[in-house]
Length: 534
Ligand code: ME8
Image (cartoon, rainbow, N blue to C red; front, side):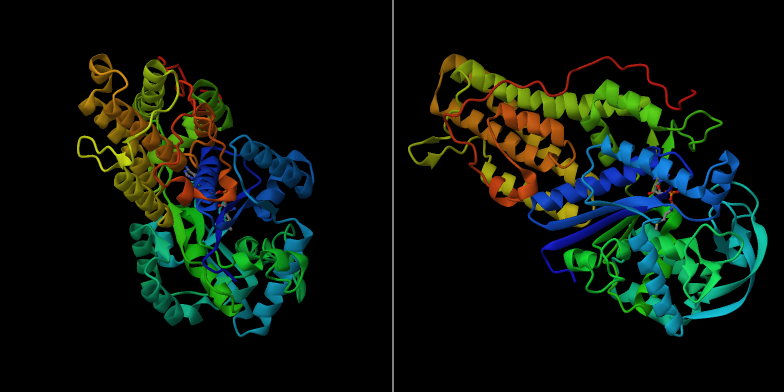
């Protein structure tokens, strides 16, 4: 099981009855940023994403199209993999819940649950959301006005003989968990929601269904199919082979358990924050460290919907990538997304503003300014920052200390999954370089005292700070930062770790040649539409 050096991050597994859209790309991209950063920082990371392929919705969609559920799952899982491939995502595996190893292990886990006191056969009647395949308590159903918060369709009264998971028996353990592990659910607003619902009291939840067949049968009673939510949650454990102790997967991957972060959207928090830990407690497996539930993207100020034509689907995302480049899209998603407790608006104007302000005017401009001056005044050869052995301290800037602090703050933000905070801190280092240039005016100095020690020191320090910022920004913009490294003659493989050593002050050797870079072209705002049919 996990020690200090390993980390495990997961996305939800996505339903294959729908096409991939910005929400899926978003969650997977932010997990990718974190995974990349942690690998660079020297952790042994396992990053998992995948598809949720069973359940009545897939069965129905397949029937409508006159194909088998497996054929539909194969087609859409391939589409998800293709799309995710376009976003430079570095997931270590892509789990599909129709895989044999998942099937075997889920049955094994359910066998264990059946042996415990946690599962029983009983009658059930309740408010049911057909689209989400989720039951609601009377209180919750009333609060929702008896309509699905996801599809807007009416909830129905459903009745079935089912196996139940005795969630009610976990009330005390759950309350204790939330008390002892205050960071178990993040952000805080989401934790409070779960706590509120927890205090209303836990009701048992169905664990099996008999009204369809597309799923994994209960090992003791094949008439029943295991409830897709219980089965889907288990993917986080089956991907690591935890249901087959001693097996190949287990020997290679068990050390990653438990998850550092299960990153999800807020609509599926209850399953992850309450049901999943109760199942894990019964299976006697360690609990995840944090369930991080982000909010939603909305589009141009409104909930995304096909009828409004404002859906940020793949065709729309592709248009943004074509106009601004992939890394700009990763940057926008990471820094402007709904990482916190409020929804975030995806708007063409906002995208363009961020591109212009942060990427063109800040990152791109600063890197270009510094490399251009070194070329102009030193023919591209990096000057030294010192006279004899003394580093010149100019304009009260203790650069090594500023850089050290920045690296520490970015790491601490990443530890909390505050990706936007981490990037803002890294960008802050670039802004300090800009401020430093404006204060010290090397261009004037170059006129008065060409090649003075002070001029050399200023430019060295600017370049060094830009280099360190680029290491911190790499997880978000891997292609652009690699382009910058090439211009600076640096060979870095972040997958090999070493961030702390590389980010130590003084990494650039005076005398090496740097090329002037232009990372982000300035441009007029392009006309971009959102939905495919907008
Ligand atoms: O719920 N903004 O799958 P799913 C941000 N199979 N993120 C969004 C979003 C939006 N507007 N819309 C969706 C399922 N997402 C289950 C999960 S896990 C064991 C099973 C993202 O295909 C967000 O991460 O409906 C959300 O939780 C996920 O897509 C839901 O994907």
